[in-house]
Image (tube, rainbow, N blue to C red; front, side, top):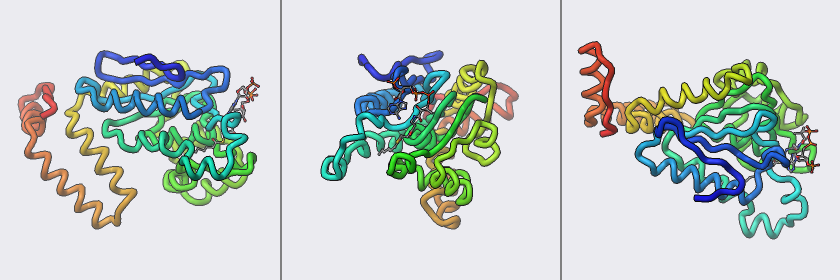
Length: 259
Ligand code: CO8
């Protein structure tokens, strides 16, 4: 498929890489880009060979937010009736394979929200995160007021959403927004290594693990633990569980077949 706002590639036929590519606008996320992103995500999700997906941007910007030029003249009628931008932003939530955000430079507004929709974030040391929508007379509209407090707690989320200030990579790691910070020139290697590790496991187990962790955001602890136990039990029906445990006992690497 030919894309105009993203670049799509693969690594070792196992990892799907989506690079946001509107450099002149610091990867501002317009509707066209989000539709393409959704198409690419769905294509990788459906590709048996792909075990993990990476979303990344440029050195200067992961994404500097939703496209302000595109949004500036929208009316309430248009955004409400047509569900402007919300629909195309929903796709990522339905992706079952892990999605890692590799963030260098600015991840602001919708860019920060997109990164938070990924399963985890690995940041370069030049990354800057923020929800500056308040400065534009709006609030985050792609889950920022909901995912940020879950990730970093109320105090930090309120601080960021109400002041619009940016935090650097070190602060983002300290408060739990990102899982790791690495030097900018190591970002690609570090994220690829993580993605290849994940893609080397049984896909069915990886999907089960992601589903179970995500369940913790939707349910009570008791219900979540019950859900986890059911999935844990179900994995004993897979060939990959037999292979994984047998390989351990035989002191060899497992050969998962995704069955
Ligand atoms: N939208 C459109 N264009 C942008 C955006 C953006 N978000 N960010 C930067 N650009 C453009 C600039 O207009 C500029 O274009 P030009 O060269 O034609 O003037 C170009 O990118 C380079 O930007 P700067 O010259 O400003 O670069 P600086 O290095 O000086 O500054 C900043 C970089 C700090 C990132 C600055 O560009 C900035 O503050 N950008 C806006 C950040 C922002 O406010 N983001 C939030 C946007 S609102 C939002 O995301 C709402 C999300 C709702 C999603 C709802 C989905 C359902």
